[in-house]
Image 1 (cartoon, rainbow, N blue to C red):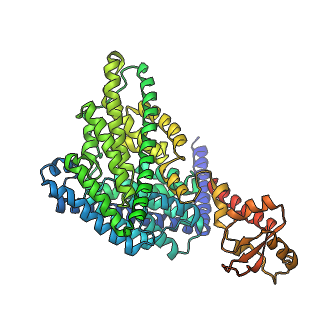
Image 2: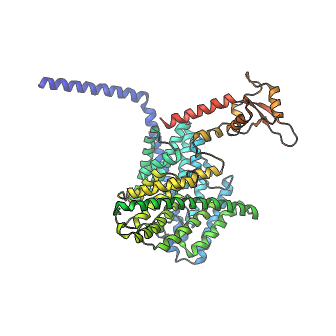
Image 3: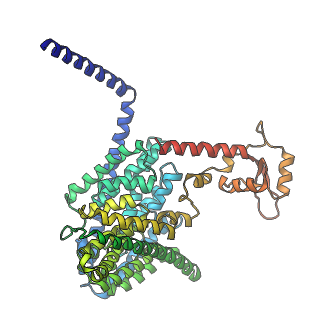
Length: 562
């Protein structure tokens, strides 16, 4: 028996040795590059985590300077004690500085945020604008520090994208690697902002990359954990919001109430998003009508905010104090309703006035207030089958935010990680699912995708829709000296019929023209303007356009399923 045992042990040792040798060969051939990539992901996670931390500390320092407090959880209570003229003028002064920053450092005086990061992931090989991104971060910091009513996650996410874009350019990363590194930076920034490592990783996958490819999961998780560590080294292992007690569903008969709450939150989320878009349109119209310089637009928005804040300082800043009050049930029904309406208006003014900031934190506040108001009514009508009305505030917080972001999975997890309450998952999931389903019908999928749609960037329908806009006609056309160029006489014949395309356009304009005209190729011209005839540059063949489009679709599919 002992001999058999010894023989078995020797076999195990030989198998282990062979496994080590095979592993070493794999490490030599493929391991270092993979390890190097994960190391880069870790460094990006640390850098993005520190960027989020410094951004948050910068807001706190500025608020302490102008409002006389460094405790953002009690900002509006302390602001109530300030003179009315100080509350009125602070957002105006902040808006003026913001306007000057955006005027000098961005071509369109617009703050960059999550929507631009999504666009960079889809259409710019994981890169975002750097100069504009840094200016946007500075503008958003000033906005939030001087009374703007928005959130800090939007500028932080774009700031993290600036870091990853710099790294991607330094290492000459291709599109897949650039997108993965962008996801790492976003995950770390969200995790560091909210102390939510799970939700940070899923947010990057669900919202920014918009796929759950296995190859991207490991580096994104590494970066997310790094960002969380940065947060906890500074603030400790604490949740953003403290609940007085663990909530629980008293009876399963209460679940239909959360279904109804989800529908209500979907409507509220759509109202919040539409209010922002309406405010942008109105502000642009007023600016054009009055011929105001664009750097004055944020100051005008600050004046409106300051006027509201004189009577309702609850709208100032991120709104953590009011959100906490809603989650703990410290507000009455009418207070919750009034504060929710005012917060929607304040957020619309802030973002529509191009002051800067994000929408996630405001949507949490509006959702908590909506849920609390609904909970007051539900528990009053059906007291025998109702639990605590604060549970409705928690579910509403997640439901509105999920509909605004178009991210039910990561938002649900963020709510759990922000509060530390994992026992109420059933209620939150029910409300989130209903609000997301309804909100995506009332607004184009999410706030960010609708923002891009309003700029003419159609990402909501998927790569089959937006990939066409990535191919320039100039890059795909056959010039006149090409060995298989189009016949010049036929080209001029088509031009005389009005069938041609400008050299500066993309396949997004060319493909519908192929369908309408039913031709094999389109003449590509340069329009001289006036009475000058167009100048023939070459021809775009339908088969060349289809080949490029199919290759791009195949590459996207390979990335998403790898």
